[in-house]
Image (tube, rainbow, N blue to C red; front, side, top):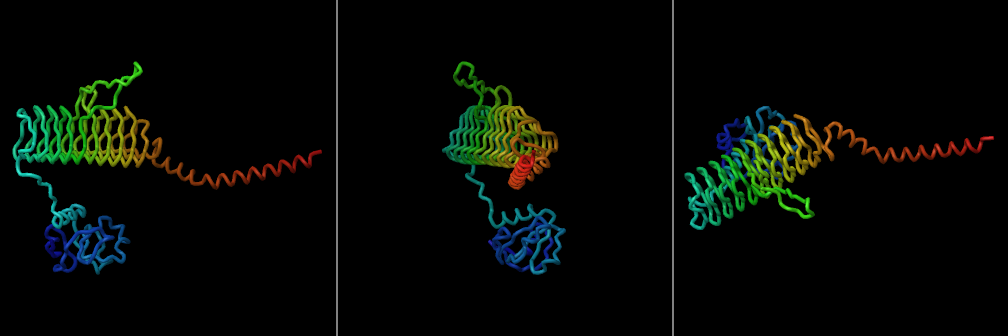
Length: 350
């Protein structure tokens, strides 16, 4: 694949500053770019990354000061990442189509209802009374158990498992090996053994949700575990039974959310956040990486640490901790001086 800069600028409706006939053969990050590569710089405050690079062209925002780098071909756009994504797709077209129509090697119960233009690969298993919307794509090994519903244009990658009565909305994307609707981790231990509690609820995932590879969402004990509209969930995330996750949350890798936790809208959880049960996270809150959440978090709060505290407070603690070795040395010196003074006073006493 190759294209001229003028062709790529037209593709993203950008303004070209440079040589229109320059040939581009690949996309690449800045540090790996070559004279035949096109890369991007989305932050105008990071021009230091451009020192000494060899790149065929850059996608930059409209407010980029091009006169500082006259030697670099530029395409200025409103939205850098969107434009670069289009160009990357041009050079590396996605290969999402698996089969045309329904594979004869899929196991589909006669009571299932299938929408228009669905693609169902070999090895897929669809149970009783399942409803599959229009334009859905099911990759090999997908299992959908009885009574589940999958909305229009949703994609289930290989080995996704939907337990019974799971509801998936429209335009969702579930990556390989994620499990939706598994039993919650709830046991009655009153008689000295661990007896599994009721697992009679379900999971409802609203439209436009994405769930990463190997992530799990447990079913409610009696009611519904719910994932709100537009929420994006990374790989290896665990969401326990009865949780109610709000709209447009961003939940990064390896987060663990215990049962009956609720969140507002636009909550951000960085990598490896851990949240105890029956906690509420307010809308717009940001939970820093590896934060241990032991109490409710107010709206728009920024918390970090274990246990999590407000970001500014935690930073002060870290500064104090960094000074502990110095403070220890000073304390020892003071102890020695006090001991010396005490001995002198004793020796001079009548």
